[in-house]
Amino acid sequence: MFHVALFEPEIAGNVGNIARTCAVVGAPLHLIRPYGFRLSDAAVRRAGMDYWEAVQLTQHASFAQFEAHFARAFEAGRVFAFTTKATVGYSEVRYRPGDVLLFGPESRGLPEAVRALASPVRIPMQGGARSLNLAVSVGVGLYEAWRQLGFAPTPPP
Image 1 (tube, rainbow, N blue to C red):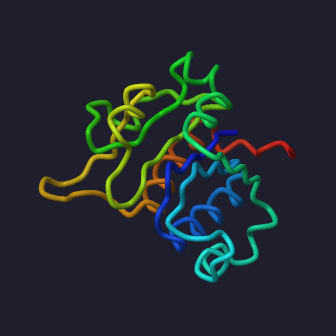
Image 2 (tube, rainbow, N blue to C red):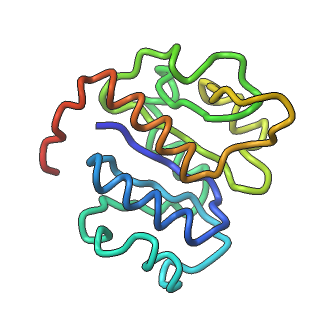
């Protein structure tokens, strides 16, 4: 399955909603510190509901640690940085199992240095719109990748 990675997420409720989406799809969730909240916050737990037990969660102390963890994916160009600054549309990519879908923090998106290491893709929007909600963006990207695999069931971990 695909990996969903959140670079320095800021809003607890978004992370809870994303965790729930990952659980339903069977995608591991990677959180890259620092966070703008505590994982024990009620908003995280409430948004994730009782799906937290089904989430394969990995926390990375830094982007450097995350990058080392996914070194092969970075080298192969299989880390997709979702950003408004890309020219390639997210649906133009042919996703493969094991790909990493990387999303930036709500207030500022992915830094240029991070985007430069990955394969940037964008979700189209009407002119003048700044960005989609992070949880919505993850849902759009993850479901497109999964759709391309025919919504194949995820094998158990």
